[in-house]
Image 1 (tube, rainbow, N blue to C red):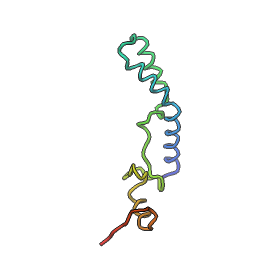
Image 2 (cartoon, helix red, strand yellow):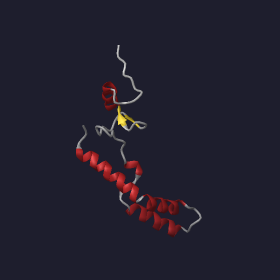
Image 3 (cartoon, helix red, strand yellow):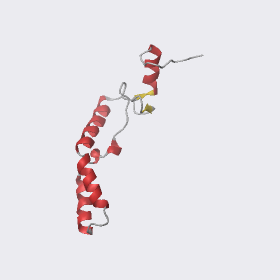
Image 4 (cartoon, rainbow, N blue to C red):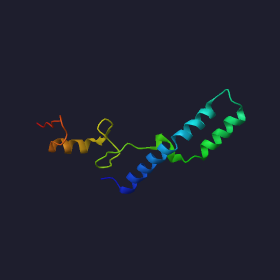
Amino acid sequence: MAKKSAIEKNNRRRRMAKSLAGKRSRLKAIASNKLLPMEERFSAAIKLAQVPRNSSRTRIRNRCEVSGRPRAFYRKLKMSRIALRDLGSKGLIPGLVKSSW
């Protein structure tokens, strides 16, 4: 099980990224538009730098919904390989049969 603080920090990043996504995308569009004057693009870049870093989607870490583990994460199932194996062994995942020999 991952630390509760790490899981909560990641959830906070998700909420912040969701709330500031529109503002970030508008500022990025202005800053990268070559047709606009240089002063306007520069001011947009400065405003973008003042937006919190944790509002960026790239700072969100994929974590297992069951255990909070950050590594070996299956996107389709939203869980780690270890949690998948445990739940599969117990027969809680439909269509999954764990084999051993």
